[in-house]
Length: 122
Image 1 (cartoon, helix red, strand yellow):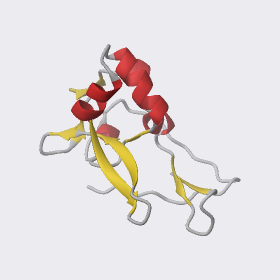
Image 2: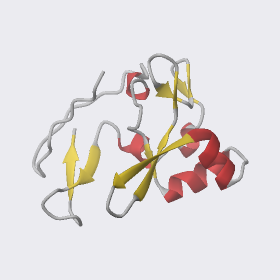
Image 3: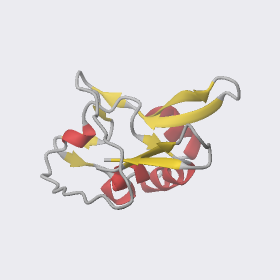
Image 4: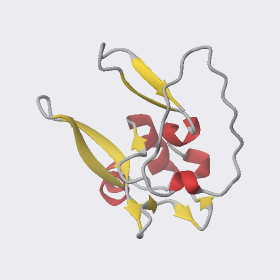
């Protein structure tokens, strides 16, 4: 299952109601990006070192082959590629969850036209 995102304009109105089904936490291989502050908060929440957190709970991807800029995403488990922190339909790290999760159902990605701009999606 691939996430289908639609571009958002600044005047768009969006209706969304969380059903607590945890579908947003499934089929997320490579999709739950963790930033430096996310890694820090999650490692502190789990009472582990940052390096142990990275090796145990993240996968590394290369954003740009030229610069070899690394991106970290949360690992997934099971045949439905669920977030490693999903148990049943509950997030086990809800208090420290990554910004990507906090923003759901919205997302952002660098704009191709200008690297310092972002395109927002719903």
